[in-house]
Length: 265
Ligand SMILES: NC(=O)c1ccc[n+]([C@@H]2O[C@H](COP(=O)([O-])OP(=O)(O)OC[C@H]3O[C@@H](n4cnc5c(N)ncnc54)[C@H](OP(=O)(O)O)[C@@H]3O)[C@@H](O)[C@H]2O)c1
Image 1 (cartoon, rainbow, N blue to C red):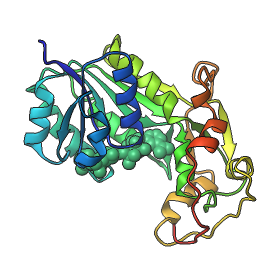
Image 2: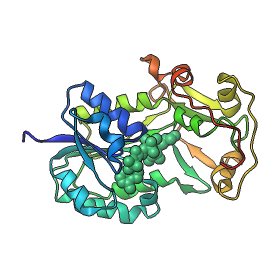
Image 3: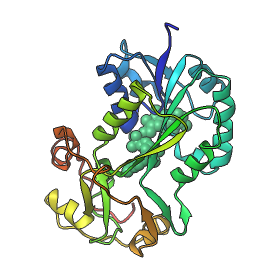
Image 4: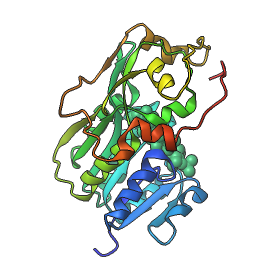
């Protein structure tokens, strides 16, 4: 049908915005969704703009009406009950023409003895029988450094990092030619693992490990105590850095926002 589009949820944000730009650059017909219309204005006259809340069934139902391929990113608060969110999406999708879904997920697959929220959500989504889904298990985005170069992470703890530009390129590839069937996983680990001490040094600072706060201890402590599981690095899931924007150096030069040192994060 001539109004069919690829729908990008969260397009006013980091990864959704980059995916929408990749799709438009490839000449695709795109719709972009998010709550804040001002953040979607960058797509004026280029894509169909759909302003609304993920929590609103009618909004999603109407957005899915002309969608053949969906980039799915679920707002954090809807991951608190992954089974309910997946079941709700299942109902809305069943009544739609969505034929393929690319879902953003995380390369940290378990923490503190349980699947991480995005992986738990994958498991629930996989119960939706009628639609092929590709889960992109991504490394930490370099943009996380914009929350602060100094954190409660132990200085030498290494985790995989990736440029969101690279995730967007891969996501766009699969959205443009959705060859996947069933329920599959693609792991994107970026070029290498980094410690916070290395990342801060690359940005020209000496890393200072901050104390836990009551709000963040549950997040950081399992990492510092080794109580987590991350996807194993292989040559297939390691980035070949085919574009300058996929490198840490590009991020540090162009997209790093320095935050004042604070113990409140
Ligand atoms: N950061 C990482 O290292 C990392 C790694 C792997 C996976 N991920 C996952 O990637 C996903 C996206 O990350 P991101 O960096 O692109 O986040 P982001 O920049 O915060 O973008 C998320 C977008 O979702 C929209 N949104 C939020 N709540 C909404 C709601 N209730 N209804 C409709 N839209 C809503 C927001 O726009 P409005 O406010 O305008 O609605 C926002 O633009 C997250 O699920 C994250 O867990 C992140």
